[in-house]
Image (cartoon, rainbow, N blue to C red; front, side):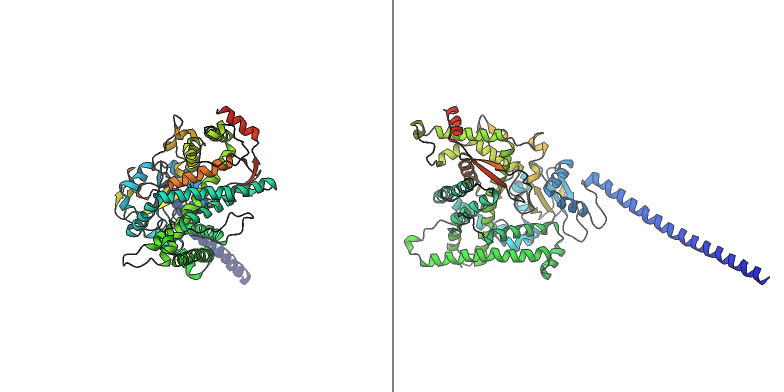
Length: 547
């Protein structure tokens, strides 16, 4: 009897345990069902918002997962695709704890509104200035209000002076014929492949230093010596750009702790500062030793050194340093990067190259010495008036800049409530990104052939015709229109014509060309090319066809 009772108790215990476990499981199953239902709701809700915003909006994270995906592939194409789907404008929502919320646009109406019509409502803003201040300080690209106006006015007077224009033209001629062509000829004779982007960066860096600061760093000497500043500046611009896609509180914490990209940025800026300080120190010493009749230097740095601030005192070395770096960014990177993409596009479009060469030879044929049978082997130096006539070459360069603008994106901040012409509402403090790279890939702006390299779109009856600065924003627009635009075109045309007349440029087979994430659109792996010297017989064909 006791055994039976014990067995019954045991069975009841087993049943009880089973029921308890069942109830426990059912209880947690309800919790699990709730969690799954909540997740499904979040996913569906996030995906529904994609129709409105263009991207899924996740709780807490916003659109950050999509941004990370874009960064891992091609950020500029990622932005272009979203803008295409959203008819030219979309709102980016970052994590709730970040400052990554902004409006991104590629609508020409909006660009004219923010760059011209409502210029005072859309300054660079405190967010942009704070993000790039470590590198660019209070230079012209980062400054607003009176600081910007003072720099702009002084630089504008200088850029439009006859003496400065003559200096820049002579500087380009000297660098191309005394340095660039010997470096290229050396590569042909060896023969070896060269990184054309690196060579062009060296050329434009030497040029901007000679014309803006009166200093010759010698980057383009034979042997292409290592220039620490070039590496430091590239690293600094790349690390600075990453701040724009990192929550402000995160990168500021990393800066305080000297970690990751902020540690790299600090080291790079130190290298940049050492170069700028040396330039300023050398110039001050030179000016102090010069007599009155030798003080008529026309470089930009010297002009600012002679000016006074609001208190009637000379500008600080820090202010002069900021000027140096901002104009180096403008003069060194933009032209060389544009030329690199231009030569890459030419190899993919040989018909365009043939048309450029035909134009060059036609212009050469108009020379009196060519009519009298001049020798093609004699050194040929293009004259300023000949460069001006090269309309098809300018169209080809503009088309390269349309597809691969040197500055792919730029930034503004709204200082009072406003509305874009496309109806987008903008609250005070809203950050606005205008996507210049994406604009060149918008069918609504350039037509269905917008992704094709087609210089003819810039020609009217064979003459070059510029487009609206709010449709083609490679040189910005409105009051901030690039001061060096005319000089940039002259420099690019002179360099391109001098190279193409002498060599065919072939990209090394298998070399990967992709944009690098930086303030300017470098090629991530450079541009490895082989140069093939043009035979006299090839040039004779073009010359005879253009008699």
